[in-house]
Image (tube, rainbow, N blue to C red; front, side, top):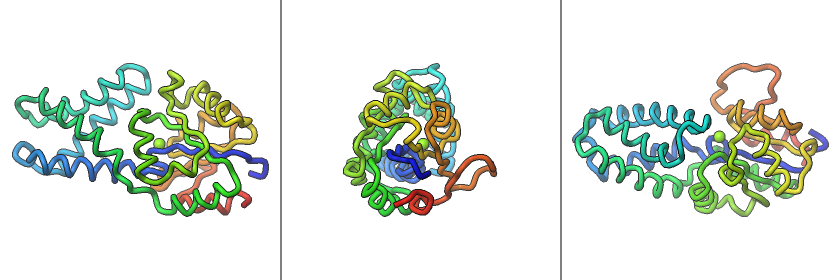
Length: 232
Ligand SMILES: [Mg+2]
C-alpha cells in the first residue's frame, strides 16, 4: 500500500450505516401511519420489506428495472404482501416518506469521522456510489461527511453501475488519479473489490460482519484499521 495516492470509498454499508438508518426511518413512518393496524409487528414488516428491497436492487443492478420501479415497487409489493387495501396510494406515500426521511439519518459505522479525518490529511479522498444521486448528497451533507471528499461520483451519472469499469474510470478521471495509485474501500465484494481490481486499482474489502473467510482478499472489520494499513 506504499504507492497509494488516492483513496475511493463506497458510501452505503461502508461509511453510512444503511441498515440502521433505513430501520430508523421505516420505524418512524410505520408509527406515523399506524401500520400496526395492518401488520403483525414492525419486525415482520421490515423483514419482508428488506427481502423485497433486496430483490429489486438485484434487478436494478442487472438493469432489469428502473430507479422508479425500485422506489415504488418495493413498497407496492410489501403492502400487497400484508394484504392492505388502497395499496397504490399507501405505497406511494411510503415511498415518498422513505426517500425523504432516510437520507437525513446520520448513523455511521464506528470510526468513520476519526478515520476520514486522519486519512484526509495525507490522501485526497473520494466517493464512488451506486446509490441514487439526489439522496447520496443529502446523506453526505447531513452526516457531515462532505468536507472530507474531493470528488463524489454517483454511478447514475455514468449510465453504468459498479462493478462496471466505466464507473471506476469516470471516477479516476474526475479525481485526476491513476488506477495503480488508487485504492477502493467498500463492503461489496463484487461491486467494489472485484470491480476495482479489474481495472488495476488496489482494493480493501470492508467486512464488518466477518461474513466469509476469503484468504486472498485484503479485508478490514473496522474502518480504523485503515490507518494502520496505509502509511500516514
Ligand atoms: Mg455499499
